[in-house]
Length: 393
Ligand SMILES: NC(=O)c1ccc[n+]([C@@H]2O[C@H](COP(=O)([O-])OP(=O)(O)OC[C@H]3O[C@@H](n4cnc5c(N)ncnc54)[C@H](O)[C@@H]3O)[C@@H](O)[C@H]2O)c1
Image 1 (cartoon, rainbow, N blue to C red):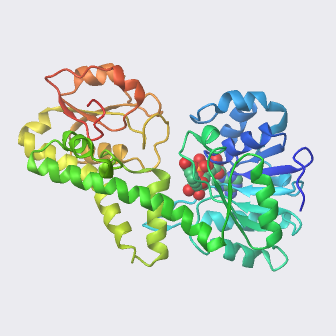
Image 2 (image 1 turned 90 degrees about the vertical axis):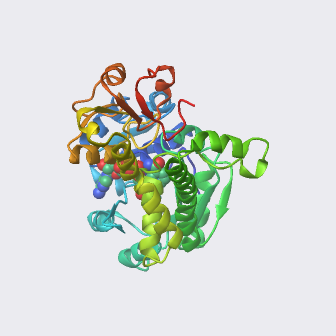
């Protein structure tokens, strides 16, 4: 399958999402005609008005620049008119298991629009063995199926994708060659693997990061219990000692990728992924640890105090609340009937207060998500600050 970027048409399914949209913009920037098919009518409308439905560095400018070659729609018929179809829809977990119901439902919905001569690329993060199942579902003739996982950091796709190596795997040699030709348009380096290896590379990459964060989170909890400042200790551990330099700060390790992919891997391994189970317990346990520490410190007084959570998104400088532990902490404090307020100008939530108001009204301030814009804030000395991230040093 030869690819001429000026002639081929691509449809990205889930094209208005965090992964589909930047990918589409980058292909359009290389001269490819891109259709973004998505069920989200509001996001589709925004994109066609050159607006982004979420925060993505440098996305808006590049979308505007390539307006002629990129079109978003809620009509799936573009699939049958395309040479290449890339699937980027979400693959959530539910009750600690991957919920692939909607993923397979999509294939049922589009089966009659697919042809064996098209190239079908799966880009969503999937449970190992899913590509094989899709191949079985579509039938033997459909050998042009590839799995090309996405490994960007959310919000930075436009700058990261051209720098990251792209892992490519496929059912047939033809699908691998075609996917390689396609991704060479936007990526410098291509790595070819088997499908199972690609599925594992994707999940291991996120599980590895998640486990690393859990080590710092456990160290943080140990230090807190011993009355030691982990952030100062961490700096002294690293100071002049190269072997320790990669130890991350503590913080809410969450979001739709790290936690989710570790959970997918654990479910695939029938709960025998020991490091996965332990790291999940540590990371997900952080909100409860903070709550218990507050109870221990302030006892009955806590009920009359105001707790402010500064930043609610699952990580800094984005507007995404999916699987956010800061949000979990908010729910937990509310469940215990504590007076809690929150501020996050990126996340659209009712009852949001300004960061300035949060600081003046709260007795206790917890950094939920360390947005860069908070760097200039001054937290008065009479406020009790919970800064797991070492944000304010
Ligand atoms: N967000 C990340 O940083 C990141 C990084 C690497 C991999 N991934 C993986 O990429 C996949 C997509 O993640 P995301 O963050 O972009 O999710 P997302 O929710 O932002 O985007 C998914 C999009 O798919 C659309 N959609 C869902 N079902 C559809 C259907 N049947 N037909 C058409 N459109 C449909 C949704 O409306 C949404 O716009 C997931 O598997 C995720 O694990 C995400």
